[in-house]
Amino acid sequence: MDSHERDYLIVDAHLSQEPEIGRWLWALQDARRRTMRVLEGVTPAMLDWLPPGHESSIGTILYHIALIEADWLYTEVLEQPLPAEVAALFPLDHRDEQGHLTPAAGFSLEQHLRRLDSVRRLVLEVYQQMALSEFRRARTLADYDVTPEWVLHHLMQHEAEHRSQMGALRMRAEGDIALS
Image (cartoon, rainbow, N blue to C red; front, side, top):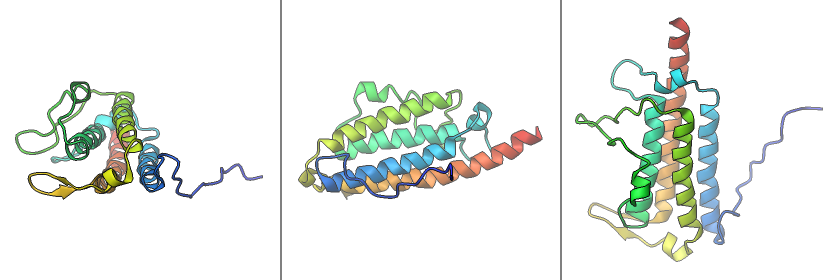
């Protein structure tokens, strides 16, 4: 008998009373599951390893993913500033004077994952309570109009792009660390 677990490749709408929102939330969670697979076995040395140039570490990217998710939830979806308890999850400035992501070194993988989980719980809570009309209601900000539906699309794309970046960094870090 094959010990391989059978894959379940079916979109599930159970995460919301509104099936359409539930499907989007399932996709958001699927994106996170894929990110978690990239992070399996990442060591502390890999987490803070910096390649030559101005690239970011895996840890810095994880910090950035959580911060952007929180920012889009509060600024665009809820149309309010980050509450103090959420802002406290992000003690570092987002970017330095040159516009690069501020290095988020010294955090353990568990700390990064707790931050990601805390923000994701907030996202799920907000969206699970949302009516479909609110999900599709455009918010008018200074430079653009945006719906909560589009925000989920953006967050999935953002995480996928950075997941690829973290995978590449991991491979480079593994090679570099092995040589040292």
